[in-house]
Amino acid sequence: NVEQVLEFRVMPYASSQLMVVVRDVTRLKQLEQMRKDFVANVSHELRTPLTVVTGYLEMLDGDALPPPAMWHKAQHTMLEQCKRMDSLVNQLLSLSRIEGARRQDNDKAVNVPQLLKYIETEAHSLNQEKKHQLLFDIDRQLDIRGSEDELRSAFSNLVFNAIHYTKPGGNIVVRWLRDNDRAVFTVTDNGDGIAAEHINRLTERFYRVDKARSRTTGGSGLGLAITKHVLTRHDSALNINSKLGEGSTFSFAFGKDKVIALR
Ligand code: ADP
Image (cartoon, protein in one colour):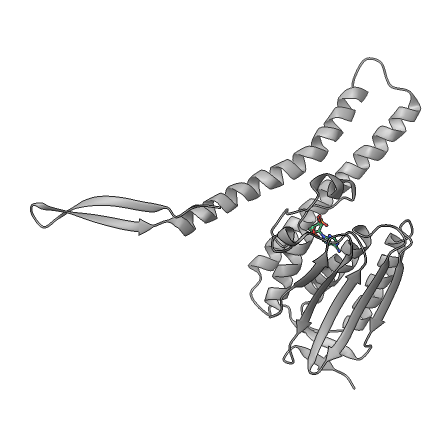
């Protein structure tokens, strides 16, 4: 948050007069602040796993080698942290690719039911510990025009978040259905829910409601920022309805110029 910033410049005017030029540089300052915050966030997110890996490597580099059981734990933790860094870098790359892509660059007919079938399979394997009831209600004839890779990340971010942020044994319903001439995607969970003051900020990069808890679930706070960009590029927008302690519904719709209904 940057308050209004004005820049004053005094310049000679005519032979014996002065002129004051006032420039509103608020937007420039805001952009500068956003850039600094972004770099600070990326550095922080990378430093945390790096510190863990460095700590273990230093321990293994010492004179007395730790017992083999400890070695295995170290190996396991280092691998987890490296995967975390890898996933963060991949998300950053996809964010920058989406932001840089010209609209409709890679657009083609996308078989959304098939895409959702893959996501359903992944969701079931992710769900093994949580044992939620997962229901997929999919219109098998509903395709849209867009970028397949981008849409895959938008759909899967919402489905995987519902699994992550719902306590074991929850109910999650995923719908891909027609509503008049629009195609609507909805994910409803009866999970943690989100307090009203956070909802508008969820699509900011690195924004997480509960930073400590998200860290243990491996989240980086980039998923919904990516989803928002993907949807903007497809002339859509993310709707979030949520109540703390009761659950959430994340949804978006595509207009008729994007919809290809096959019946
Ligand atoms: P993360 O990598 O942390 O999951 P996201 O950008 O996908 O990042 O989500 C941002 C934050 O929004 C999450 O950290 C979480 O606090 C909140 N959130 C997202 N989806 C849900 C959900 N279905 N239920 C409750 N909170 C959610």
